Amino acid sequence: MRKLIHFFIFSVLAVGAAAQSDVQYTHFTFSKLSYNPGYTGAKGAFDALALYRNQWSGIEGAPRTIYVNAHTPFAGKRNGLGIGITSDEIGKVNTNAVDLSYAYRIKLGDHNTLSLGVSGRLEQLRIRWSDSQAIDPDDPEIPQGDEMDFGTNFGTGAYFLGKKYYFGVSVPRLLKNNLYQDRSGKKDYNRTAYVMGGFSATISRNVELVPSILVSYNPAAPLDVDLNANLVLMKTFWIGGTYRLADSFDALAGMEFSNGMRLGVGLDFTQSELNKVTNGSWEVMLGYTFKCKSCDVSHLRFF
Figure 1 (cartoon, rainbow, N blue to C red):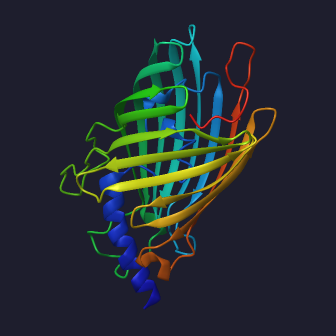
Figure 2 (cartoon, rainbow, N blue to C red):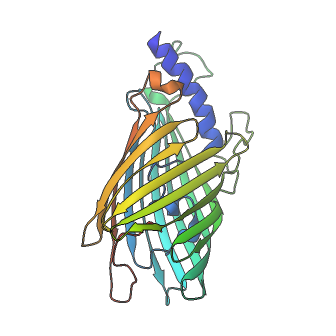
Figure 3 (cartoon, rainbow, N blue to C red):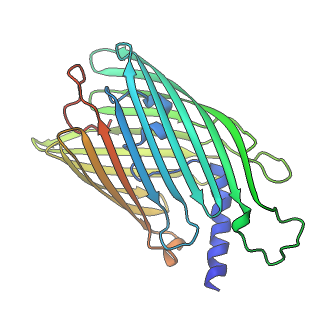
């Protein structure tokens, strides 16, 4: 009976995942490039990031995601170039993608920058039917072996960066390609639009409050809203939390070292009906910002 319940829950989740297709990260304040190509080069220096997400721990076949990216400004910081690689696995379905992004950065005064970005994407979808155990192996409707397909996509976004605040809008996947269709050939992918924003407020000499929000809208899925607030201590440590609408409360903590390396962890405490069968989710983040004499990067930056 427990396996049957798990199967039913996963079937429902798989439908929602197919409709949305984009991965959500608890460390969304650090992984803006995965949502918005306009963010490319916004750190003001060469920056690299690696994330591992283990979702719904304790459920067999639950999503596991690895995401890495790197981006940098160039040509007098008027342009940005980036790359992102995603490997996402849920059950017997594995999706791999490579994104290349470019942003043109327009200076608006001494502290404001508007970036307009585009991205191109190569996607691979693989379904491991060979790992399945069918009740009737001779059923002709059950696929044999593995199924693999490729598709392309592109996205666009705008990102405005001020001295102590940011705002962005984006649609990172615009096309209904052949990876998002059922067996009848009907393409059922609906584009997800993102709105992000945040600011930094000084509380004392060694304490800053950094609230952030990420809103994602997909016509085929419930509205997703992530509300985050982090306390940054001595421009080195951060501790905070996120509320994901009707889904979870998340805890975050991390540290940036003097050489530009940062390490963070996140724990999601599920509040939906899934909390009956899962211990929650967790993430680990490792990043590095390469500092240089001409870069205005001397301490931890959430933007």
